[in-house]
Length: 322
Image 1 (cartoon, rainbow, N blue to C red):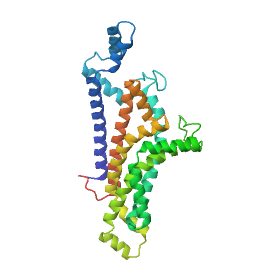
Image 2: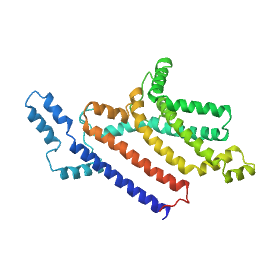
Image 3: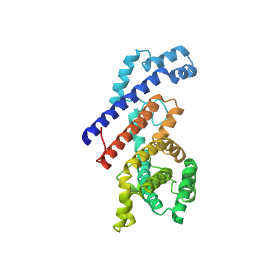
């Protein structure tokens, strides 16, 4: 099977996975009673049954389940994700508009964090593998374990206090709209990016060190060293051979970490991103926004899995794509 056919199949599996997620989400929502029905009946000053029936009719909950399912799939496919019923933004605002406004805020610190953590892990982990007995390597390993053990919310609170109270960096807060034409306005996002990069790099550094240490004793490395190659060239050969396991470990670690860290960071730094949007939606019983943000997170995991397959095909042309 050619590389292109392999990627085509993986893309098809990703699309299928997206529709499986849609289906599971629908039946979870359909089986669990809508909390807004009971809430409407509880707060109404008139007839509770009438208020509950009004909510059921407005949300088409009295229609056959298959009709609701097909409408659900079509709406999600065409990005008609309903309207907000809570307090984040304006009541009645389309969910897609809320997501369009909050996702860039999350990406503003998420992308730099991924770049910084990956670069740090590759550089520092390689050095520790090449010089395992040095004091610098021991210090780096100790700092790595400390960063891995310290809760991210604690680091975030410390940085937030230092940036806001001691230096006054965040006195104007974070911009609610991302303007790529003005990169200077994005500098405050480097602070939450640093927190996230610290958590990610601590775990990735261990993977790079372990994989590099395992390969440094191989014959091809000894041959490269015998030719008089320096540390930089040696580690380049090592990392090229360790690319596949590192890609797998990096993607698995990043996805699992990011799903949790995004909520923590945006809560501490009061960032108006998708994590904050989801937390407010849960508090307000805002089901359309909860479903929309959940779908975005699930789709992000599917896309990350597809990108991992693309990385496999890119880094190892000898891979068996059967």
